[in-house]
Length: 637
Image (cartoon, rainbow, N blue to C red; front, side, top):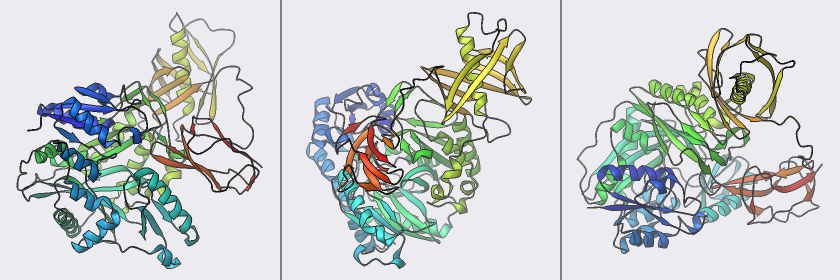
């Protein structure tokens, strides 16, 4: 019987495992880096153990420290979560050698799937269908497009799509460097890149008594940078024959390596055929959609299997449909750049499941993945589940860093997504520009609401007073556009320049009710320093923006707040991981030439020359930590 579990992880997955442990009467142990000292998973655990340092390499990736922490806290089992050391066979073996229960598959099974190249060899022997590898030295134009992929790890790191043969060597070098930095293993391989394919996976669960469950399918085709954004179960639009093929192949894969515990077998589906991609020997981020349709707790089942208990001969039958969206602190319109800062509020309406690693007031830093939360909706049908999830996200209040919330709502309502037959992994390649265009949400109305609420909050008379000689003026910025609001607020109501059809119905410091073109809309206003977040009720006409983050601008801007033309500033906090080979000040560079790479939130971000010119300054060096706005380079036109 497991009595105390240490979760060798952080954030959302640690909280998820703790929740099940509490329900089962199992005590919990958290570990934390210095950056996570005040994190929710630390506050919620019965006991917490510090891992000195901030970087993952010094903390969550130190298996020796994790085992030592479990012993010090009196834990008798370790759950690895996902990411970090969850698929590290050496760590799993060290846990067992320490006399602790490992809540995961046997080390030998993990080792079998640790290298994707070796995994493909094993799957071929087991009769699992897969794509044939391509020798990069013998590749021709006829082989394009190609996919360069790290043999170890996952999460899209060390992965490159190659569409021009001349770029293959450069992409191989970049992928090897990224894989070595991320996983300590620079091995990569090349295979055909299937255009128009779907990412479909099968959840498996196996016990030590010969039972293997295949818990339906999930579609995870909507991805950015080869990382999943929206997932659903069951995968829509598959024939019964293809589903049978997928289930059979997943079971064959599990039995071929003597698997035990929860895992996922991932496939590429194209033209009615399935090809093995990889097996994740751990719990997946998207496991809640499978739980929703089967009525299961996969973490509880992981614990059951780890205790040696048998599964039932057959799993529960699935019912209904579930969709999950990953809410990231990132800006999709700016190359998916991760965002940092204080998360002031994260609030969703009732009726959906929220799995989050952060709470109100937490700081989103640079050391870890930018995912804030997973939002999951279940309904009897796919259409209903998608509508429910989109509506919940639209009504969410997310105050703090820029997020992908609007992108998620638009994605869920896009015709290609609502038509299961149109799903494939190229969704964002085709549609990102349209999905990130400014909406028709009348940002000026949000600025007006912010100005009126501010006036009310600062007025001892509640905002309604004698009309002054001149209008009140407030200026706000949003997405690079300034909005100057000029208004009078008197006993006869509102008079605002540029808003002839707007009537003020109610006013409080945190709420403004306006009648716009005959429609009543409520605007909730929240202030955090010079930032103002305004959330509106959805327009019945649809398509209008429901939230806006505004920056209140001073009446007299600082004239010294300028940078030299051609300056490249750090778009986010991070670490300079490398500079282009041989690049020095005085070099001539072409527009778009990569100059250096920043690493932030587990991803590398390429900084390129904005125009052709001379590199007149390069003040940074590899390994240097930089903050937002740090000068990285200057290219003089």
